[in-house]
Length: 331
Image (cartoon, rainbow, N blue to C red; front, top):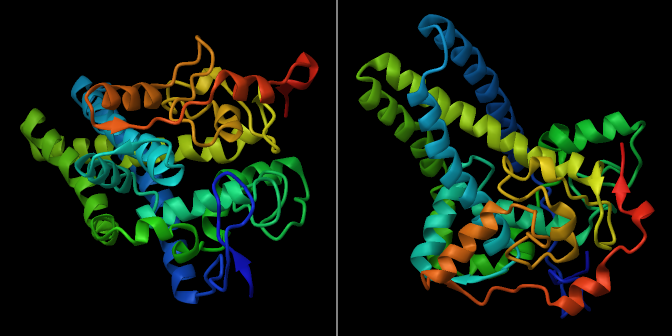
């Protein structure tokens, strides 16, 4: 079928091509289902073992909490600042060692390979709340509406991970496919996922001084870390399009939620993001805490990142919602 090249800003298509947007492959479908099932199973197993360990030890161990935070924050930054803002939206440029580090950390989040993640999210922005959106809470990917709002929220939260059409990286992520270094990182995805599980287990064993401590490290820095950050992203794909404030016009139903800013590292300012997708920092008001944006700014101070595409005052005013009755979106 005839398609057009994908443009992040939804400008006029650049040129015609015959590359399909999605892949029709039973093998890829099976791999997708297996991956989604493994993530859910990992979360259930992690919660069960964590409860058993807490009962055994008579409470939560501070070492385990430290391992959880110590692995969650950098890996989540790899996903948020790396996979999302840098690789998908090209909101800033960075030196190759930084790009590789972000790609490895993002891969360790176990949310799919770099090329898959970028392709999927670009497809979401290309079709937000319309035919082709893999995780809209309002319509299926084929454009049919959900039977109920609850069904739509469930699908956009978790169900879509089993059912969405696999995006074609050759169409959506051709810029990354042309980079041999990043392709090598992409192809070693399972290694990065396994290291993201093994390293906290080693840390737990060393800090606790026991094999039980290693299991605890695996659970808190591995299984529960994966479960937590997946849920933060699933919140973005679902409730961040249903509940919250819409401070800017964005041609979709994306919302901002201040109360989720800290656990999502600033990704909960989703309306800000959809209004200005190439913005590296989503803190567009003084009280909006964007930890990923602060991290990118820190890279800029160190000279490791540059060309940050901040929206201008004129751009902000042009899209600002001035009617307060239209700003709040409720379930």
